[in-house]
Image 1 (cartoon, rainbow, N blue to C red):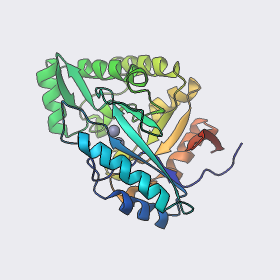
Image 2 (cartoon, rainbow, N blue to C red):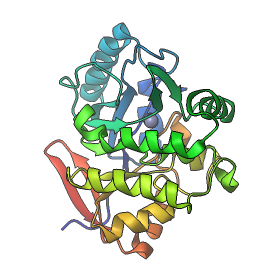
Image 3 (cartoon, rainbow, N blue to C red):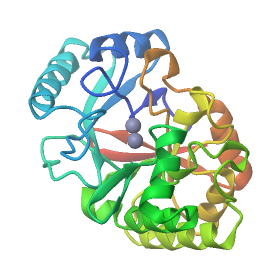
Image 4 (spheres, rainbow, N blue to C red):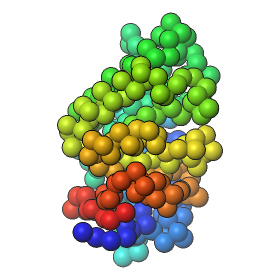
Length: 274
Ligand SMILES: [Zn+2]
Ligand SMILES: [Zn+2]
């Protein structure tokens, strides 16, 4: 067992999708923070919403540039070319070193409603797609989440409970409500059967939207009780947020009971003591 996990992040966006910085600028930021590994995970192309993802042509350039940068920075930092594959994406994941399996939108009667765009869009989705019943939307979200590994061929599971993004202060729903718990735990149990690890994602924390990571503390306790495995990611859309609050969430995971954290290497996952 390895001790002290390396400085790294494998959930990283660039201007090829909705990130704010170029791939090289993200590498420079990672180097400045003393990272030894950096994985890029551009949003896969989704036909139903082209606003946040890479374009089809952009995916080709993304792969080419990240591969070139990996060579350029060899010996300084290990670069990985991954993809954040949306569960509704039909693009191949073959060219990538690893895959993050993510649900961003709930599908109802052929219409896709994003749960992470803005509180207004979420509100509209609840009203127009689910007759005003937020727990019906949540049920649908976690039904999709339950299948995310099968649909994306994920290496790890992205932001398991993304539907909580705008729910600070229980603005939209009560996560202790049975309807929420049951839906989430059904998905968690289904995903645990795949053996796929869950990321602890600090993306909403660096944006100041949430005080807790995805999954929430409540869900991390459930995950630990079910012997789930974890890794850390900051879902960075800028260089400054790379590795955000990793110390804090590592301590949190340890307090909950987790003893190890996974980190990707070129040969697959390595386990490190928390
Ligand atoms: Zn995502
Ligand atoms: Zn992401």
